[in-house]
Length: 539
Image 1 (cartoon, one colour):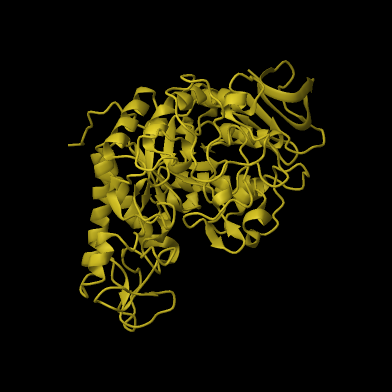
Image 2: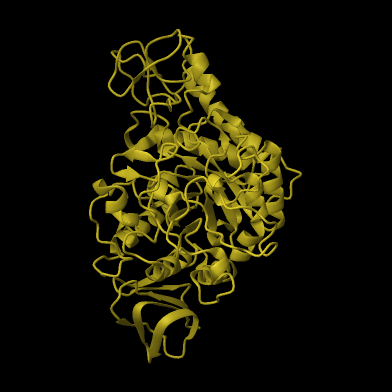
């Protein structure tokens, strides 16, 4: 029989995912209640204290980056205990309280599942380093390119999955070779034990009211897996277990190629700054948020959401069409995900792009037929802060440091009790030093602010069936403006560029503006000023 939970948490998320607005928050940067073990670091109780804000904003689900016990060599993505909340965030009871209180407000909670590796301080790895027969990790007796020297009595070398301190859990190799005995088959004891452990971890947190998981590096499990066939089979089997045992719960992947990942069993997969045949080009062709400030290796991709108007959304639209076609052919259903940014990628406000220019990008995110994901602070126009100090593995190479996307949420002087219990701002990293930095407090009563725009669109997304991810879309143009019609009668026209533009939208004459800025309609022609946008009801 399916398990149930006594919690009031909103665990039946899967049927509502098409109209859910997801909000990604970095626990250490969001809000500090002062209740957990490290003062100044955001904690779970701080998130609970800000649930009224998230409900007011129109958020239907929150995704927390890893909050488990960890030495934090990679900001928590190096897990040392999958079953226990890190003391700096609180306790397992604090997580249960968060899911309970979130559920009362109609908000689901997703955790981050690091499926492909652990910390080198995890007891599983410590035991494996002392036991030559232990195959929970990938070990070689001889040096191999990409392997690291192993600790413990075992000696030998182990395969990392990301940083050297993150040894890869062994889910087997799709192909064996007699000269490479470390290539375990997928049905070997270690790989099978690790599959069972994934389910045990998920079940533990499901029973505390969690609605689902975002799975880190979901494509990295089975090694040397052409076409990711065996990795896909692993996740399809996991999905079958999930649907039978915890119906309504969801799995969202960090894969970056929804054409493959969603038919492989995930409910949704994000377009990312990497992944797929184009190596992340669909998302970067939309935002490419100051690539030169973070990772020049991504290249100078002209982005659609820039004032220079040199990009085009066609690359993104083609990728979306391919993905939705593959998802439909897979027969299981599911969604693509469109994030504003994330903890690895620069924010919408980055480089020369300011918050006013970012408005059109946010309208796109919340009206396109994908699952929208708002990265904490993007709703007020927080910027990527160059020069932020490297912290907890944020620097990946000399020119690529992610700390600038992880700075504390900018609450400002919110009146006590206005958004829930009084809490402190995080001091995990220094605040944006710009004296004109945006804050929630400054925008809270300003109906013309970015915050209120996001709020209105988030609530519209939930209420209007034309914005369901399953509702049809007709693309009219992909440049300047980018124009499309949702559900046959809701037109969206967007101009992130600084020059005025116009387009004919059949039925625009007599339309009603649902959300608009810098627009006018003459007959069926929609005119937009620079950085203008319009959501028009044609019915």
